[in-house]
Length: 124
Figure 1 (cartoon, helix red, strand yellow):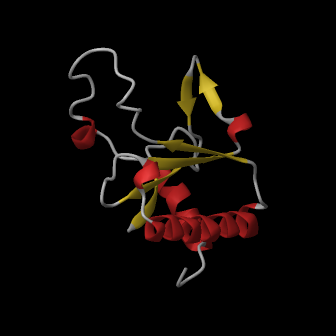
Figure 2 (spheres, rainbow, N blue to C red):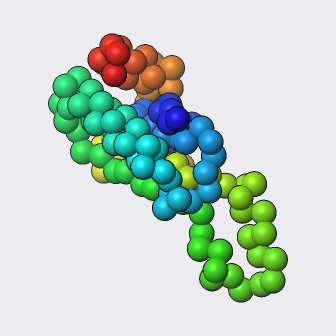
């Protein structure tokens, strides 16, 4: 099962998609998980296109490192306990406000989440 949620916002519209089983690497995801992810992203981007005018976005997949390429013995021995794959989607990455390398969100995360929830089609 997947869940999408507004994240610890570095922008007003950072969304993080996690797999609830906390799988370590994306390449180990089952066909069902990939199908669920495709369905979730389709609904998400359809919502953005309709309510926010199809803004530019940046989507980043975070997955566990290649444990076969380790330098020290025992390196990453607890990676299965410490890590899970996830996606982050940031809208309008070119206009993120920064002050000295620190991201500043002009919209409170609760307001950004409400905007996205209100725009999301019911039953999607």
